Length: 194
Figure 1 (tube, rainbow, N blue to C red):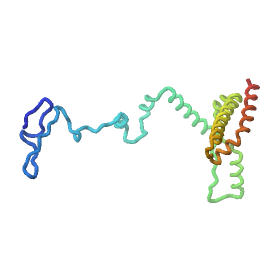
Figure 2 (cartoon, one colour; figure 1 turned 120 degrees about the horizontal axis):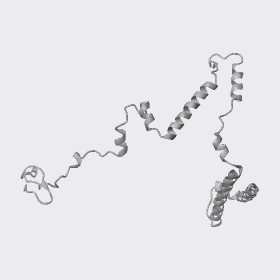
Figure 3 (tube, rainbow, N blue to C red; figure 1 turned 30 degrees about the vertical axis):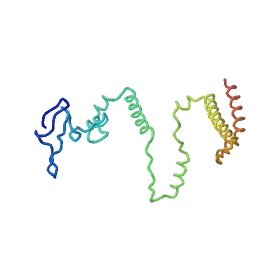
């Protein structure tokens, strides 16, 4: 019973089929040569998990030399910009003493309100505002309006077929005529800019 066949070898000692409680023997298990049971297989690790093994104990901590060596050209350029921005922000703005919130002076509340009202929100970057011309803005509005018109026409078709529409969908169908006239005026304005 312990002989090997072309399919594989027998596991265990010769003649060692396991014995049942009633005294009979089970068949021997035949296992292919080189087979490793699932319990003994190494645990699969993805590429990401393998890469994480080399991460330092403190996530995000990298010595400056290693960090600089792995940075791309654009990352280095952006890093310089950030440093210049920080340096410019600290140089140009002198620190003002902040009033303590627990002990208000006679005019501290009104002064605080005036400071809040005089501060301006940060301006959008010049690249965002400079890139959008009036013609491009009108074309974008026109495309959005045409999309609304197509959706409303689809809803009108559903209504003609007898399907029930929600309140919002009915409002869209009601606005269809106004959207058509608005689309025509936008087309005329785009032609004027061309």
